[in-house]
Amino acid sequence: MEHSTPQAVSGVARLLANAALCVNVLACRASSISGGDGLTDAAGVSGQIVYVTNAFAGGQRLLDSLEIDSASGRWSQSQCGPVSATGAMCDQGDFRTARGTVEPFLRLPLFERARRSDFHALRRDYPGSGTVPPDVVMHLLHIVQNGRRQTISWESGAALPPAVDSFLCRLQLARGALIICRE
Image (tube, rainbow, N blue to C red; front, side, top):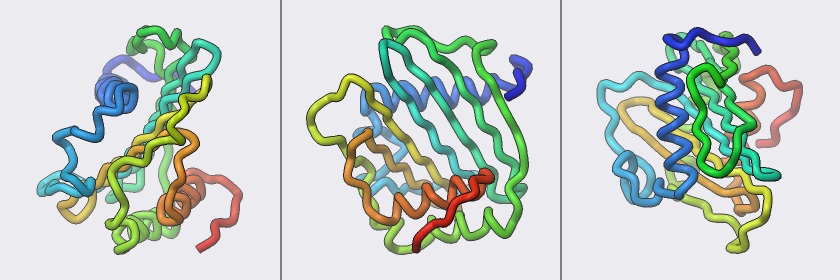
């Protein structure tokens, strides 16, 4: 991945910092960005998918964010880390960013899947097994489309519904993975 200028990274840095804080303390459960079911009004906000992972292993943390714009198909993936898991924050210069475009034949089904009733019925939070493993990954999926915002978060080891697994598979396809997704 190429290094980006601090100006290009500033918006992503704020998003990642806010998402990391939200995921770190599992504050998404009571966050004002979501209603009880994770759906809220987002009138005037352009359609997008933001998927953030915050991984902790061996005293280190790796933060990864993927953002896809629904209209243009442009995607941006930013990573920071590994940094110390004991409170170190990523500075703007620490982010590595790659950009590209998702073809419509991959992008449109991805957003269509997020409009399905089984996807809208998802809970906002899927906690892990209850025991905290030494290495953990926390995930935050944030989707805005058709004036609605949906936020879903989960920990590694959480039992995820098929709608989430299917969406994540299609998200990998949209980024160019050579895999087959089951329905």
